[in-house]
Image 1 (cartoon, rainbow, N blue to C red):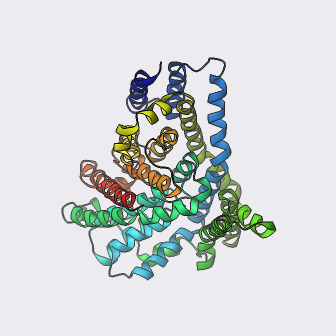
Image 2 (image 1 turned 90 degrees about the vertical axis):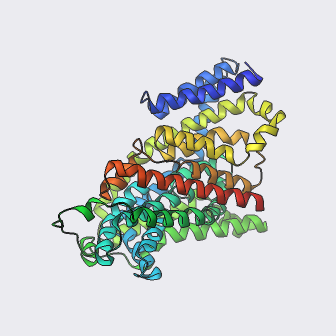
Image 3 (image 1 turned 135 degrees about the horizontal axis):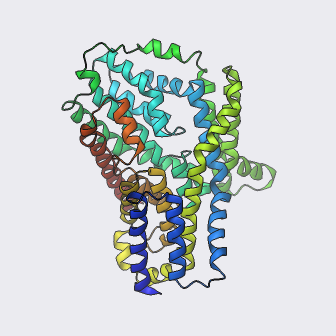
Length: 452
């Protein structure tokens, strides 16, 4: 099967994969692997070559991103355990000021979720949110949505969270993570503004259980929340696991762009590679863990990290298999030779595909990694070739992976449950928020695409 018939089969296969995951509750790993095998057979790949194609797609993904994802997740786990995440949040509050609590909450979430999963980040920062609501008397719903927005935006846009790292590696800019981080920060502007405005709008119209209860619930004060975490790391200790990898990657990028040769140039490129930079960040996190007197938790944190990232790695590898199958077929050549229609979609294609996958199966990380595997071989046909253009494609995937969060998404239930928002109001708040910020992000990405 070739040409338009295989393109039609590809569309049907992707639709079937969505049904398998969303409706039939088949695990994404099994669904993606099954569809990859079916597509390999339909594409007419020689039977003797199919196992090698599948194995190559699977192993190459582990080779490129496995260690990076593990280190990034470990750093986040340590920041949670030591209270460094709270320390970083406190820094943001001091910078923004207590007169802007909703903005402070949004920026706090954006900073913390760079290394920490948005679900766990919300749980960690929710006591702070409640204390801030009590102190400032602002809308609890507005504070909840601002926190949710900040966490979500950096979660899908900025490494070292697993989704953006996996997409960067799959799309061939894994060695330019600093560029991806910079563009991710830039693309956060529109969705952060839109999320802030929508949170204020929804907060004026919806009430949480905290605001309509009997008033007997005891909400800890800001200082009580801080005290419950024990002694917090110093500012330098809290920042080191995040700042050091950024600095190393920056020097590595400078060495590569400047063409520095010799031992110094090789050393900077070595330390600036994502694996070594994040390894250095992990070392700083371990030092922070022992400095905080919680070294006894080192093994359990490592074990918990591996259990957390395991499913992500396997689903990511399955996405790599699907991408390898597509690359091994004649689909890319066919699309390239008939690329005018595809190029008309351009940067919107990865956004649309990721939003479909996100809405269907719930996980932003699965939507990002799966879409990246599908889009990778199609980048030239989409007119996305340069590192900046590819980075914008990653952002488009991330924007789609926010659109939308509803009942099949664990983050939806974390936000509504901890935020005290009734389930029926969750669609009017969290779901609508993710629609607004996803579209706002895509608008900014489209504008940047026109510029670059």
